[in-house]
Image (cartoon, rainbow, N blue to C red; front, side):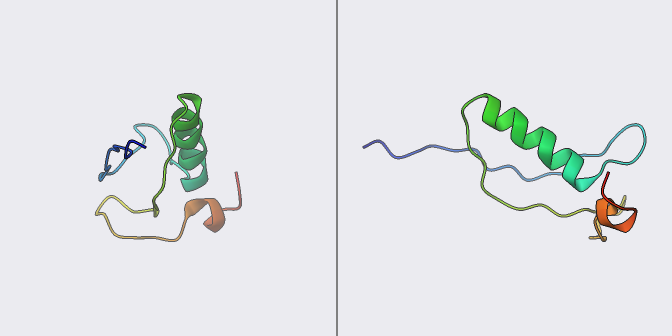
Length: 64
């Protein structure tokens, strides 16, 4: 059986307008990945403009 070849992603996504909720992003990202028959394994955290980890805004202001 052929060994799977993957892509390692390391970076940050910022919204150009308004706030980007963690769950909003993850739902869109996973939908994109799965729509192509791919899989994703990894983690993510909500960060501020300085790259510092913050409480997920989805939970800070109530689930969107």
